[in-house]
Image (cartoon, rainbow over all chains, first blue to last red):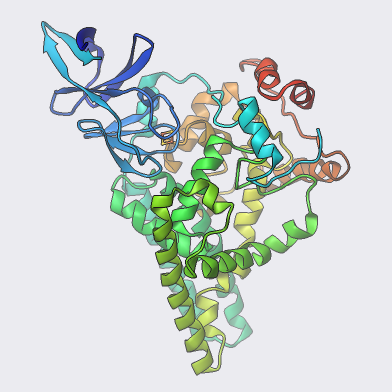
Length: 104
Length: 363
Ligand code: FES
């Protein structure tokens, strides 16, 4: 069953940046876009399971720190080799300055 | 350790996967996120400037070489052109394959494709090969880009200063790929979806070479080949010289780049040709940092790294005797001292990854 999880405060993530969030044995990446919106994807790169939280957010792209593969973190779409498999994304909402993500 | 088998399909490849050496988690120096973000920032300025200098220099030197042809006075201009074609292309290929040279993606891709042609590396195949080199740097049986295998074959190293084996191999692969096939080792790291692209690029290259050879035959002169093709041989020496220093004589089968990579301070001309890849430990630890920010990264983490060699000559003076020793003792490698401010090498890390044999090798 899906549930909303309180992940962090909005001011914990700089604009155009991301943080790692671990919950229930899984790891997620939560992003703060340049226009102030928040997004959530799986935290590990689909290429070789590296934490995306050490990567670089450029606009709406997250670049993986290991081989510079890129994803659009709004849709999870793989954008630059060597990543070929899309990232899973998760719904996000903001309530009272807190970021909540909906996970299974 | 038994004799190394560098085949990507052999027993060492299998062993690396079984022992967890393949795709392992590597050591990183701690850098605050704020500083790392600043270092990773992309910009077009430095690479546009360097690309104008690079391609502009090629046009200038080739122009003078052609004007003075066939006089011997043209030779120094061909040598300069050759280094920009046969060596600077190596570092451009490399940096653009990471996508870090320019901020604008099409600029990275454009330079990547031109440089790949010059250095004779299929841009599709080698993107994957280089990803593997970063995942499994100098892990025997996994890394397809090990420049010096043990025991070293010196004749091979010397021939490569003139691009002989390397370029031959590149032309052979080009023809193989153009015929619609991939080498079985390439097929281990290139995904199926990318294979048609490998073939299309190879076919375009064959057309360019065929046109160049046709022109040379029509003119009854090797001049066209002096511009396209041959500089991969007569200009290769600089990238081989700098490339051997990257990992030569150091450890293999470890998961700490301080043990298997070498940073060497170099003169500004070599740094321009090599695009700062002389900061090689830094590059492997943090491949997201663009070439122009590597000196800054070095300053930030040097307390945790072995002291760099102070010149190319010093690097060779350290490496060459070690390679000679590896002729007789394949397991020998240079273990470079860390400064007292550094976090020590994790011997246990390597023991768990490699078993007892690896623990002794790292000592
Ligand atoms: S692990 Fe992310 S691009 Fe390779």
